Length: 153
Image (cartoon, rainbow, N blue to C red; front, side, top):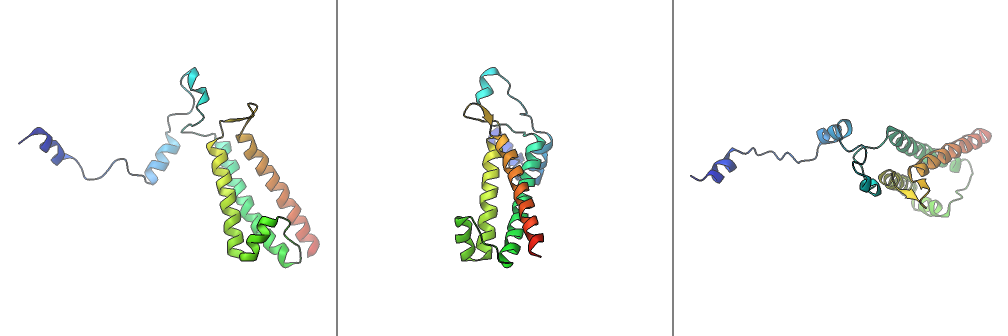
């Protein structure tokens, strides 16, 4: 019997490169590429690890987007109008289309901004700064909607 055949027979059937929750947890807790190793690598913007602040901003922005969708529906019931023509077109298709379009667009934007968080826009600003700006804008929008909701009650 050849050695190759013996080695193949002794291998386990489970593939160690399969993706699962263990992969996510291990990659989050024990990721190795936190910074660049060489000076030449500073142009590379993709790392395994992102700052926890980006996680807070991305989850917070997504939660604020959900609150915005809910408050928008409440305000529309009370006689307000949707000022965004794109969202108005989605609303004309139905509530489910409106909510799924809004959340999908927000999630896609967050994904792109987190993915490019180390990149510089116009060689001046890190793109992660835009995530902070969007979080702040959503927080102001929620305050505006709450003031209008309490005024209409």
